[in-house]
Length: 282
Image (cartoon, rainbow, N blue to C red; front, side):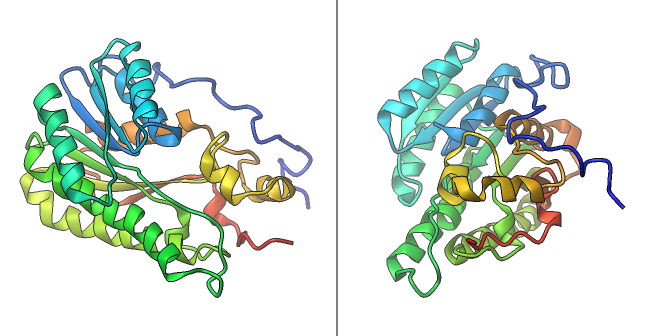
């Protein structure tokens, strides 16, 4: 028997909201708050930065490309908030720590910290080099720890909220993703442990796992044109998500609406994790 969506074919961009939903999250929600976003100069993380800025937060975005950092900061400033664009490699704790010190000196103690820097590519385990595996673990897992550890003495307490951007590979194996799966699984364990240890200080720590999101490097790297229709057909929502939808989920987890939520993982994937898609090419 056919279900209600079986006869509906939707493109990856069909029926999606067009911008951050200010009707759900009022624009002055985070006035007086300060955010730091590692990996925030592009993609999903820049979308979260835009949402934070739209809610009135002061925002620092960090990346490795000075030009992208400057452009992101300019875009955020145009939303009416104070914004900085800084450069550092999250694999280098000293450089990251120094950049975060600059952010706090300029904009004040941190209320929100997002660890979103990531690296990925497709490689079968038998073809993956030791350096390739190390690179992804260093950026994703060590980079997340470095971001949160550098932030710890600079948090405004109680009430600080930390958010790691993870992915479904942490929980479900995906073909060609042994490096990313291991790194993201480590992030999930890190989040739970930090929530346990830092909770008494008034710090919440959560993770957010986006599914396939339109117009992002993750989709372009991991899903070929030939695979696109098959992927969309396996998503219960029958479409890719949008960066603004991930930002909505992030704002909830960072806000006082989630004041009793810590050590947890939120999926923002249209139900993709409910399917059996394993990423293996045809």
